[in-house]
Amino acid sequence: MPTEQLKAMFHTLVLIRRTEESLLEMAVSGKIGGAMHTAIGHEGQRVGMAAALRPDDYITHTYRGHHHALARGMKTTVAIAEVLGRATGFAGGKGGSMHFIEPSLGLYGGNGIVGGQVPHAAGLALASYLRGEDRVAITFFGEGAIFQGVMHETLNIASKWKLPIIFYCENNRYSEMTPTYRTASPPELYLFARAYGMASVQIDGNDVEVVYHPRSRRPRRGRGPAKAPPSSKV
Ligand SMILES: Cc1ncc(C[n+]2csc(CCOP(=O)(O)OP(=O)(O)O)c2C)c(N)n1
Image (cartoon, rainbow, N blue to C red; front, side, top):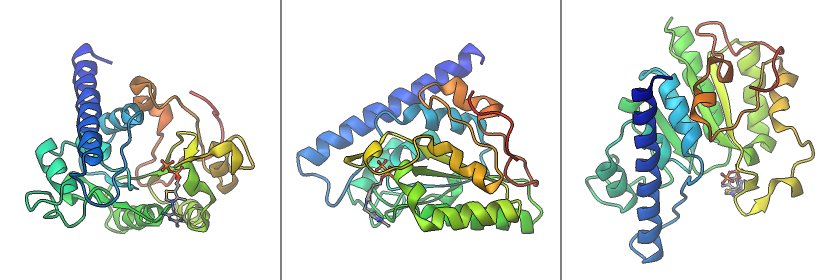
């Protein structure tokens, strides 16, 4: 990637990390009401994918939403105001940390229900298809969401209807506080998508260049999720 682009990505990485560290400090000192989840350690995958997506692509994500919004260009002042419940937040402070949403930035909602955002992305992908657009939907979820029923319903219909969608698992090896090895039966979680006839790859989400690489996303605009196999790792 060109040096200037890498510098810009590094700037965004640091911006996200510092913003979330500040939010953590404010939470510890009691300035933030309600739950607040950071995505410290997840910045790379989000910044890499932000560079790969088009500004008008559709995004849904989890209750860890700050990094998605900042990578997409939301002002830090607006993001922080929302978390603090202030009127100057993007939702007037009524959504808070768990419900980051800003359609003008392609953000169609963080969701407190594990896996709840996944079918929403399928709906956006369907809308894109029905309108004859070439916009892609991408849904980010934790590995804990893989065992939700709605995940499998969505994988199935997305493959059957050839929806233009990317399923992106942010696997941090913990379902919140529970180590994934204690709850997940199969070790290779990314292989789930193959059961539904889609290609899937396992990548190092901390390497922005790997995340950005076309093999990591392989969206088929207007032609549904990429078909399985051939590759397994990037
Ligand atoms: C349907 C549902 N079940 C349970 C919960 C409680 N819950 C909140 S976070 C979480 C773990 C999610 O793990 P993962 O998807 O790996 O995301 P992480 O927070 O680890 O990034 C659970 C079970 C919930 N919010 N929604």
